[in-house]
Image 1 (cartoon, helix red, strand yellow):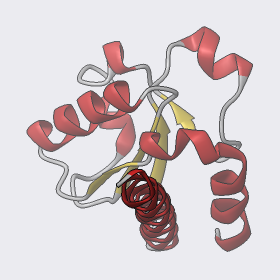
Image 2 (tube, rainbow, N blue to C red):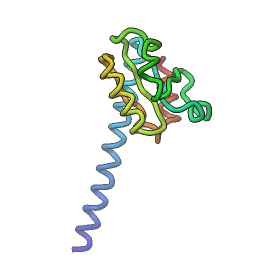
Image 3 (tube, rainbow, N blue to C red):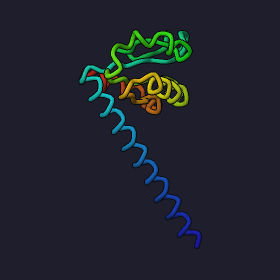
Image 4 (cartoon, helix red, strand yellow):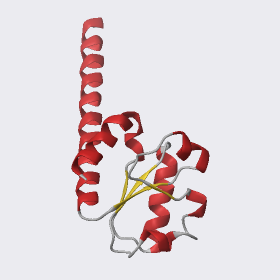
Length: 126
Protein backbone atom coordinates (compact mmCIF):
# COMPACT_ATOMS: atom_id res chain seq x y z
CA UNK A 1 0.00 0.00 0.00
CA UNK A 2 2.85 2.39 0.84
CA UNK A 3 4.47 1.83 -2.56
CA UNK A 4 1.19 2.73 -4.30
CA UNK A 5 1.08 6.06 -2.43
CA UNK A 6 4.70 6.70 -3.31
CA UNK A 7 3.99 6.03 -6.98
CA UNK A 8 0.95 8.33 -6.89
CA UNK A 9 2.96 11.12 -5.24
CA UNK A 10 5.78 10.81 -7.79
CA UNK A 11 3.35 10.76 -10.72
CA UNK A 12 1.47 13.78 -9.31
CA UNK A 13 4.72 15.69 -8.78
CA UNK A 14 6.01 15.10 -12.29
CA UNK A 15 2.58 15.72 -13.79
CA UNK A 16 2.33 19.06 -12.01
CA UNK A 17 5.89 19.97 -13.00
CA UNK A 18 5.16 19.17 -16.66
CA UNK A 19 1.91 21.13 -16.56
CA UNK A 20 3.62 24.18 -15.04
CA UNK A 21 6.44 24.01 -17.58
CA UNK A 22 3.92 23.85 -20.42
CA UNK A 23 1.91 26.71 -18.89
CA UNK A 24 5.01 28.93 -18.60
CA UNK A 25 6.26 28.04 -22.09
CA UNK A 26 2.88 28.82 -23.64
CA UNK A 27 2.71 32.15 -21.77
CA UNK A 28 6.17 33.16 -22.97
CA UNK A 29 5.38 32.18 -26.56
CA UNK A 30 2.09 34.09 -26.46
CA UNK A 31 3.80 37.14 -24.95
CA UNK A 32 6.48 37.02 -27.63
CA UNK A 33 3.80 36.82 -30.35
CA UNK A 34 1.92 39.80 -28.90
CA UNK A 35 5.10 41.88 -28.68
CA UNK A 36 6.05 41.01 -32.25
CA UNK A 37 2.63 42.27 -33.34
CA UNK A 38 3.44 45.68 -31.86
CA UNK A 39 2.40 44.95 -28.30
CA UNK A 40 3.78 46.73 -25.28
CA UNK A 41 5.36 45.20 -22.18
CA UNK A 42 4.04 47.10 -19.17
CA UNK A 43 5.72 46.68 -15.77
CA UNK A 44 3.13 47.55 -13.12
CA UNK A 45 5.44 47.30 -10.09
CA UNK A 46 6.04 50.24 -7.78
CA UNK A 47 9.02 52.47 -8.60
CA UNK A 48 11.45 50.87 -6.08
CA UNK A 49 10.70 47.36 -7.41
CA UNK A 50 11.03 48.58 -10.99
CA UNK A 51 14.36 50.25 -10.17
CA UNK A 52 15.69 47.03 -8.61
CA UNK A 53 14.99 44.87 -11.63
CA UNK A 54 12.81 45.06 -14.70
CA UNK A 55 12.76 43.78 -18.26
CA UNK A 56 14.76 46.19 -20.38
CA UNK A 57 11.99 46.60 -22.95
CA UNK A 58 9.30 47.36 -20.35
CA UNK A 59 7.45 50.61 -19.79
CA UNK A 60 6.89 51.41 -16.12
CA UNK A 61 3.37 52.36 -15.06
CA UNK A 62 2.70 51.39 -11.43
CA UNK A 63 -0.60 49.64 -10.80
CA UNK A 64 -1.80 52.56 -8.68
CA UNK A 65 -1.36 54.94 -11.65
CA UNK A 66 -2.63 52.63 -14.36
CA UNK A 67 -6.08 54.14 -14.91
CA UNK A 68 -4.76 57.72 -14.87
CA UNK A 69 -1.87 56.97 -17.24
CA UNK A 70 -3.67 54.54 -19.56
CA UNK A 71 -3.44 57.01 -22.47
CA UNK A 72 0.33 56.34 -22.51
CA UNK A 73 -0.40 52.77 -23.63
CA UNK A 74 -1.77 53.79 -27.01
CA UNK A 75 -4.88 52.57 -28.79
CA UNK A 76 -7.15 50.08 -27.07
CA UNK A 77 -6.53 47.53 -29.84
CA UNK A 78 -2.80 47.45 -29.02
CA UNK A 79 -1.82 44.14 -27.38
CA UNK A 80 -0.47 44.53 -23.84
CA UNK A 81 1.71 42.17 -21.84
CA UNK A 82 1.57 42.96 -18.13
CA UNK A 83 4.61 42.17 -15.99
CA UNK A 84 4.94 42.37 -12.20
CA UNK A 85 6.84 40.72 -9.36
CA UNK A 86 3.54 39.44 -7.98
CA UNK A 87 0.99 37.40 -9.88
CA UNK A 88 -1.86 39.13 -8.04
CA UNK A 89 -0.55 42.59 -8.95
CA UNK A 90 -0.32 41.52 -12.59
CA UNK A 91 -3.81 40.02 -12.49
CA UNK A 92 -5.26 43.22 -11.01
CA UNK A 93 -3.53 45.27 -13.71
CA UNK A 94 -4.84 42.99 -16.47
CA UNK A 95 -8.35 43.27 -15.03
CA UNK A 96 -8.15 47.09 -14.91
CA UNK A 97 -6.82 47.28 -18.47
CA UNK A 98 -9.60 45.05 -19.79
CA UNK A 99 -12.18 47.14 -17.89
CA UNK A 100 -10.76 50.30 -19.49
CA UNK A 101 -11.25 48.71 -22.91
CA UNK A 102 -7.98 47.05 -23.90
CA UNK A 103 -9.01 43.88 -25.70
CA UNK A 104 -5.79 41.86 -25.69
CA UNK A 105 -4.04 41.75 -22.30
CA UNK A 106 -1.76 38.96 -21.09
CA UNK A 107 -0.59 38.68 -17.48
CA UNK A 108 3.01 37.49 -17.70
CA UNK A 109 3.57 38.02 -13.98
CA UNK A 110 2.97 34.36 -13.26
CA UNK A 111 6.21 33.61 -15.09
CA UNK A 112 8.15 35.58 -12.45
CA UNK A 113 9.89 32.42 -11.25
CA UNK A 114 11.44 32.13 -14.70
CA UNK A 115 12.02 35.84 -15.19
CA UNK A 116 15.56 35.60 -16.53
CA UNK A 117 14.69 33.03 -19.18
CA UNK A 118 11.45 34.79 -20.11
CA UNK A 119 13.24 38.11 -20.50
CA UNK A 120 15.83 36.48 -22.70
CA UNK A 121 13.14 34.83 -24.82
CA UNK A 122 11.27 38.10 -25.24
CA UNK A 123 14.41 40.05 -26.13
CA UNK A 124 15.62 37.40 -28.57
CA UNK A 125 12.43 37.63 -30.65
CA UNK A 126 11.65 41.34 -30.39
